[in-house]
Every structure is written in C-alpha cells, then in structure tokens.
Image (tube, rainbow, N blue to C red):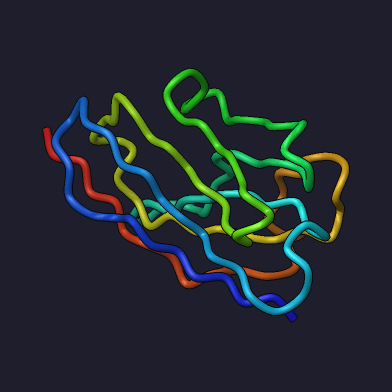
Length: 125
C-alpha cells in the first residue's frame, strides 16, 4: 500500500505560481512512477504531468507544457508540481497518483494504482 497526501493548493491570481507537493508513505516511493491529474467542475479527471521512478523521464499534457514542471525527491518520498503562468482554466482539484510501472510515464487513469485525495487550486482572473 502507498498513501499519498497532496498539499500546496490555494487561491492565486492569473499569471501567478503555486507549488504542489505529494507526500508518500508506505511502500518504497522509488518503486513507482508518479503522475498528477486534475479535475475541474463538471469535467473528467485529466492527466497533467508524470515522472518516472528516477526522474529521468517526464511527460506533460499539451495544455501545461512549458508552464508546469514535475519533479521528485525519492529521499523525501515526495513529488512536486511547480505551476507557473497560471490561467483561470487551470482551476481544478489536483490529484497525485502512483503507478507500479516505473520506467515510462503512463497517462491513463486506469493505470494508476494509488491516489491521493486531492488539493484545490483556484486561479482568479
């Protein structure tokens, strides 16, 4: 079992920045790829970014590429999502997820083995 807890969400103005954290406990954190997803009101949960076990491979949704950066610190069992140049359309609950596939980043929700409860990000215009 892996427990994931997100933090760092909040209210920010358009153009601002936030850094989300995903703290893991339980099994060895480095044994998982970590993805961030988000879900806006009335919409399906969508992939945002992912990072493989070592941090050597990352992948981003086109909507956030160049604005968001995913990283991880296996010694701290924590993954991060640095979000910059935020837009109102980035408003959503952000979830981190862990995938047993360690080498490549998978983007489908059904591939994720564990989920956090989410943290709300609100971007005002």
